[in-house]
Image (cartoon, rainbow, N blue to C red; front, side, top):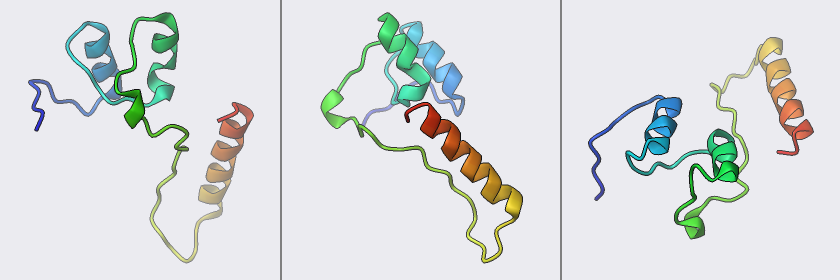
Length: 85
C-alpha cells in the first residue's frame, strides 16, 4: 500500500504539487496535457493508462429528466465532440 503525506480534493493543487516536485499523481490528460507537451511533467506507468476513456456525466436517475439537464448534457457532448475528444 502506498501512503503519502499530502491529501487533497483539489486537482489544481495536486498538479501544482507535482510541478513542484512533491510526488506523483494520477491525473486526467485534460488537466496535464500542456505540462506533458512542455516537458514540465512526465507520464509514468503508461502501460496502466486507461487510454481513450471518455468523459462521463453522472446524474441521478429519474424517470422525468428536466429539459435543462438534457440540454446541458447534449451541449457538453457537442463541445467535446468539436474538440475531437
